[in-house]
Every structure is written in structure tokens, then in C-alpha cells.
Length: 154
Image (cartoon, rainbow, N blue to C red; front, side, top):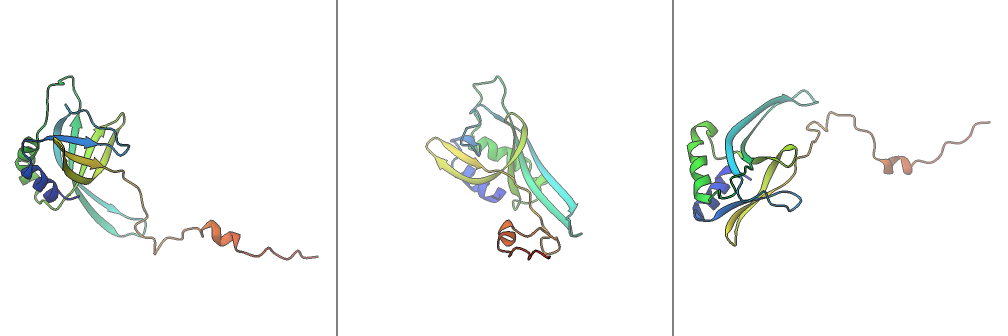
């Protein structure tokens, strides 16, 4: 999901709370703070030798003892607008960094106004080969199962 789409949902529902749903369906506690908005740039070489760039907007959450704290959609939109010069564009993917219990990054897969909150549904990240056309991956097991047995030499 891109930052522009999140901002649209926040602007349309400024008085609503914000809720983060982890991939297993559990909610981040409602009193979580968004303590950081960051632009994260990654420059790397894939296994095929191609140089690549990737950028994301990362929202860091933090759960403290302040159980009366409630983040509204309008407040989060204000934080994102303050970060606009740093972020440079609204065309960034959004990730949420949350300690659950290990510090992890989750891509935002969907956002919707539900009942009393703007809900950000979080997914999981996966690794992948970005140069499959150049990698010599092993044949799938089904390939080996279809082979005929060797004749025994006498």
C-alpha cells in the first residue's frame, strides 16, 4: 500500500482512532504511539549482479504504560504531513515497525474505516530471488519423480 492511499483514508476519518492488526489477527494495543516516521532507502545488488533501489515509509509503533493515549487518524495525518519534506513523495510503500515481541517490519496490506477506527492490516515480508532468469535453481522434486530408473549394467 502506498502512503497516498493511507493519507486519503486518514483525511476522510480524522476523528476516528487508528488500529494496527498484525498478520495473525491480533491488535497492537490501542494506546500504542507512533514514535517515528522514516524514509528507509535500500541500495543493493541482487544475486544476478543488478543494482537495485527500494524505498519505503516506515511507521514505528511503541507501546508504553500510558494506557490513556489514543492516536486519531487526524493526528497521524498531521505527523505524516510534518514528515513530508523528509519522505519526498507519497508514492512510498508503507511498513509498520513493531516489537511483537521481536522487532519486526510488516507491510501495510490494506486500510479501511471500520466501526470506530481506521484499521491498518499488516502482512508479512518474504524473501525472493530477483534474478531467477540467471540463477541455476534446482529442478523441482516432481522432475526427479518422473525420471525412469537407470538400467542396471551387468
